[in-house]
Image 1: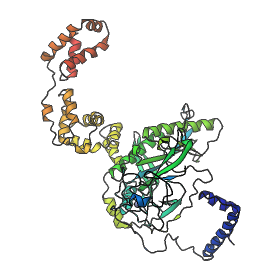
Image 2 (image 1 turned 90 degrees about the vertical axis):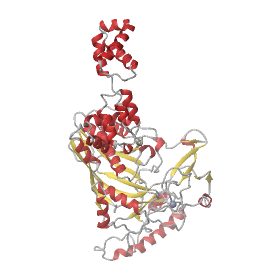
Image 3 (image 1 turned 180 degrees about the horizontal axis):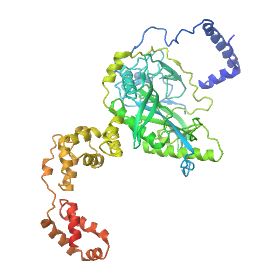
Image 4 (image 1 turned 135 degrees about the vertical axis):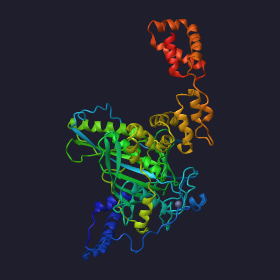
Length: 94
Length: 489
Ligand SMILES: [Zn+2]
């Protein structure tokens, strides 16, 4: 059973700037532990000869030429913005 | 509305005495991290325009605004230019490079991660040879990788100071534009070499035409890591980071001051704390200042939306073939003819190709360097616009034509179809038969000064020479005037 401590949950929450209640910490502790355990199945295999995978597709160099395309009109840029100040997005003070 | 950015005062370390350093008992250890904005047409992972001057948020799209479901597509030219820089720095170009997500939460970054590179960068293990008066200093390049820039934040307050900031305004035009990060080994041991390295790297980047690399516009930015250790030891002690320095000279001064501060702390039995010192709060934009325990905890993982980059030998060979002789090598070569100082000024000023053309056209090497480094730079002319043959004529005739004619010609030397000939016809007046009566008249008109000169106030020579030059409209030969004024007095 993969373990994740309460402190680890709080640390990750702080990195993500998320505030959690005590109940949520307990809930995520369990859920994250389950995820880790599922993933840790992989370590049951001997993978010492397998190079790390960065991507499941066997392709490389998917790129585009450096040619501009139209940008979004401002009304679409701000369509979902909770707060706007002129042509700027406005957020709480950082 | 008052805008203000940043929260730290410039570091004040007081008197920067280099106690101990003179005795050679402490060795500074300096590493640099440089960011250069690529001047591609489009951004790194979307095809929004990459450029200054647009209205806020007018150069944005679902990718760079991080709308759900939008997918990044890398800019091929940005990848090629990073490889080119890597080759110029003698790096190994990765056979396979991978983009990673660097996770952090801040309003300059709408995805909550920056696409960057981590353990498989495009370029690694290179070096830059920095010419100095005492030969070449080799500075190791740990890596050069490609990433995306962040948005511009403006912190606003209802009144006065930043502490009362009420909101942050975000302009995403810069968000997602291509940025190359270059990290050096801690191979630098004095401020002067750090400064020369930065100047040389800047010139290299400019000549490769991959960035304007202008400090004042933020298209080149750098951080400096500084620590000191007992001379002869190879330990690495706690380092401090200097950020937001907006000139190379300022950086050199800042480094010297920080070295002195650390030495003083150690000699007083203290401990240097790991910290970041901000030098120019007006230029501070990001990243967020994190607490010590959160620093470096970016939870890097491979960007699942992007496949690896595999440059391939053909591409690397093609890019290598485009490289010209690099600035460092040119400084060393020109220093065989001129002093190291002159060679350095010419090359890092982007003037050495013109200098070579002037010399090829028959100008004296030293004279040509003098004119370029002084009058030419002061006139603010783009070296690329100059007909070297015409400028060479001017340089060679400098002593024979009136100063005023020379200055006037130089100001116009960048103009289309410029010819030096009309200026060369204005010969300087060196004929004593012509000058003597003028000089005599001026001496007669200023008997008091003449008397003072004769009784030992030699400084008054300049007074008379100045009057003669003015009287002749600048056409007299100053050397001859000097001689004749002395004689006639
Ligand atoms: Zn975009």
